[in-house]
Image (cartoon, rainbow, N blue to C red):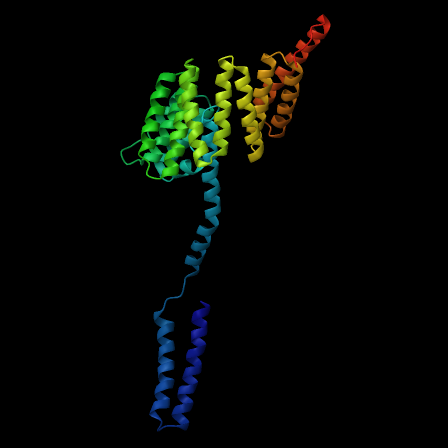
Length: 332
């Protein structure tokens, strides 16, 4: 609009110039021609170049204002999916989930699946995940969907179906073109297969898969994944009664989690160390780790974990009192 006003002023000046030149220099065709060109050119610009409508400006403003809002909605949906399908199983990374949410119908199905999973209605959630599958789905998205399905099957106590879904996720990961993305997808599927084997009591297979996952995460510099893998290995060593190896892996996991500032991982590692020391009969050491873990869980408001650790502390304190009463020495 301002441009059109400015051009109107120019046209007016050109018109005055045109009249003055015609009056004082009636025989100067060149001067009159220049003024006339300026005058009619300005008029042409005014009448034939459309102004930007206020409606379009407002629409552009609305769109720019909606962008941050839409981005936050997308991030919230990513958080919802991770929370709904996580637990002690790995989920696709945030960027992979954002890619999944690009298409409207898929976004709606994933939102409903997350809502149902949070309500412990995982069987219904699986139906909405299945609705996301289709021939047009790219390999990385297919790998992510099957991974979420595997997690849902595990939550319903169906390890056979979970294993099948994770194997499909692994197969889809092999078809991903980008090297790092392929490795991340492979590592996640392998790690979750390790969970299945651990639940089935096939501890050697579980360790094999966790070790492969750990190697991939080390190769690509994924330290959070590395800490998680060490924790998984520590759990398996604990199940095999190799408590010293369990301690070794939990301590490595603790160091990495502290280095990267992962407070939830740090608290979990402290809790795992306490569990092992308790099994070894070192109640004093276990109590110290439990109290450190409890402090972190309270800081990050992990309510479920707070309750479990408080219960463990009460049991250890009771055992220590019993030891003291009977005169039995505790192990250091």
